[in-house]
Image 1 (tube, rainbow, N blue to C red):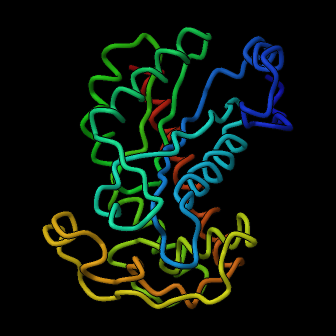
Image 2 (image 1 turned 30 degrees about the vertical axis):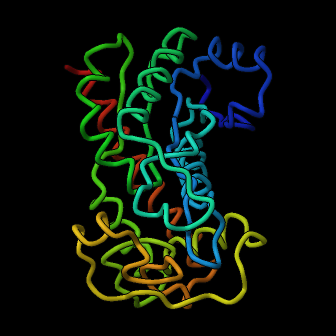
Length: 256
């Protein structure tokens, strides 16, 4: 590779000869975004997590320079949101099977590295559990962006960097996600931004009784301070941190 970025990194937008050509030119990494189809309050679309994961994945791909972005997995474990119409939830076992099949497919096509990049909180524990198996049962390198708390910390840091003084102990349809959607596709965001539940959240209550036990609109956080400029800052902060982590993991794989 000569170090230039590919004009398009989204695999689904390419023809198969273009993907074949990219592989021949040294594009050896594919990034798999993991999203969800679940309620995100009265102001954000059901595909919010999928949009965010894909946007971050594209920024990471451009930074890496030798990567394409796979079509996202648009569903995940979302049981706590099923009280709201439109939410689609799959089991952790189903998601694990999808991860296995995706990695196997990428390997068969000739990719040498797979990056699993979640944008939905419910995917993180599944990845944490499945990651050891995925690395042992394939010949290609698999790097997963793990750690839900790390992801939420990055979002909080991005908010602070954007000058938004909002504490998000739980991230769901609040300031950070709303800001990122405003940066990605503002036409999908309803103008009247809500304030949801901003206090503490019990995991036991959340998973037993659903998000609506805390807020009837399904919002955990305060979306009102969100701006597109803040969203751009958050996306860049997360993408830069993820890229650094992925490069470090690749480096370790290369020397071990």
